[in-house]
Image (tube, rainbow, N blue to C red; front, side):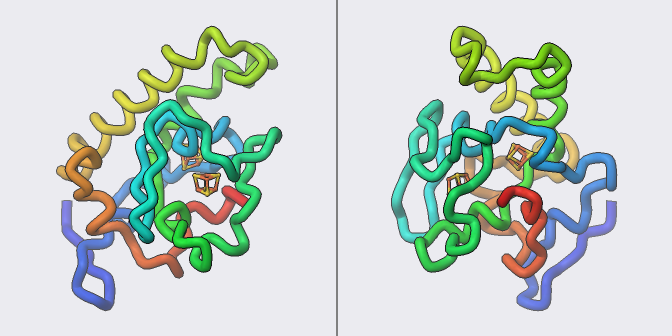
Length: 149
Ligand code: SF4
Ligand code: SF4
């Protein structure tokens, strides 16, 4: 697969992924905001399996308009290779979610992490656990996560 670069010379991973791997957060129950350990731009950390304090009851981000000023710009650049929507699709079909059925949450979050990490390695040759994705993700202006707010 050809490699692409941002104007700053960094590899633009989001530009390399196939269209069917581009996510729509409206088809997801915010698995990245919950299942993942996140180290934000300002050094603050959210541990894995901890719900972000800014996640609303309807699975949107309560601070989407001010992510950068809060040191949360990483959230705008994040993408999951469509892992979240795929894993959540049976829940939408059943009319439930991990808040209504909390007993499914551990399995759901584990599965999301597994698929998300495997896809990054297989498709982009990047390891999210080593922060490869954070270092090389596109500029915030690309807003792959724009449907998140
Ligand atoms: S980026 Fe992916 S995992 Fe995160 S909310 Fe959007 S679709 Fe879900
Ligand atoms: S997108 Fe919003 S709710 Fe999700 S982790 Fe970032 S700040 Fe929290």
